[in-house]
Amino acid sequence: MLNELEGKSIVVTGGGTGIGRATALACAAAGARVVVADVNLEAGRDTVSVISDRRGEAIFIRTDVSKEEQVESLVRDTLQAFGRLDGAFNNAGLSQTNLLLHELTAEQWHCIQSVNYDGVFFCMKHEIRAMLRSGKGSIVNVSSSLGRVAVPRAAEYCASKGGVLAMTKGAAVDYGAQGIRVNAVLPGITRTPMVESLAAQPQFAELLPRLEARHALGRLGSPEEIASAAVWLLSDASSFVTGAELAVDGGYLAM
Ligand SMILES: NC(=O)c1ccc[n+]([C@@H]2O[C@H](COP(=O)([O-])OP(=O)(O)OC[C@H]3O[C@@H](n4cnc5c(N)ncnc54)[C@H](O)[C@@H]3O)[C@@H](O)[C@H]2O)c1
Image (cartoon, rainbow, N blue to C red; front, side, top):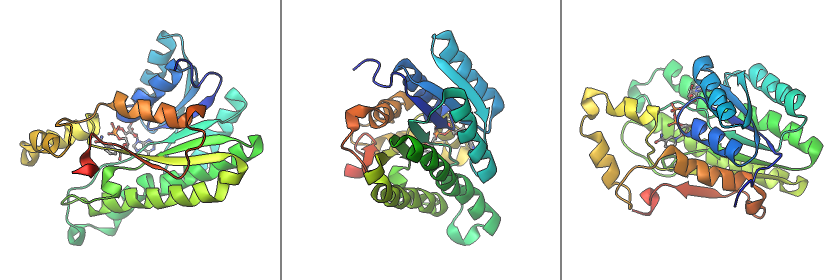
């Protein structure tokens, strides 16, 4: 379907790189006016400039999702720029520390939770307030297959992503009657800067082939493949879908 997001105003957090960038580009290609929110100014602006080059409509709003006041202004500025908020892709996230749980400092624990978990809470809180005014909206939170199953040395990451799944269902139940749908995507391992930087560490030299073998399709995902699922969940084509955990993982969770 073409132009499935025509006229919709959509916020994409972590839209500077990886899955967020691919989703911002896909939303704009589907006709949405996109707000790219990222803590990384250069990357966020670059996404907007690519969208503009392709004759799409986008603005960049520098936002650290772990700071509630910044998320509040993100939503306020979005309403000012585009008049409404129809959809949100809450994707900004940090990867695991690769430490064991007993080695983690409280600071390292909170660092992950403040972005991956608190950040999704702050985003949903302010997005939902805006959507309640228009009586409609679609929120897509980015969890992970690691919100459902664990791998070694990622307990703090798994906890943050499992929390996102529970928060997604809670919000879906609370706001369904008001026309707001809330779903989660669970990407399998996806070739983004986050994964490439892990794989570049000497202790993970053998990582990529092993990771590929963990997927039924025998390969990692691309950011564009996650973006396609996000566009569908953000669009009216998924109008009866809420509270869902959509695994976009090449069969990772099926193995
Ligand atoms: N890549 C994977 O294999 C994979 C798998 C499952 C889930 N995920 C999840 O997908 C999401 C995107 O991951 P990615 O691989 O594209 O990562 P990435 O590192 O390529 O992109 C993350 C983006 O989030 C931004 N960001 C980080 N902290 C932020 C903050 N506090 N406020 C605003 N923006 C912030 C970064 O600047 C970056 O642009 C994350 O939530 C990640 O946990 C990724």
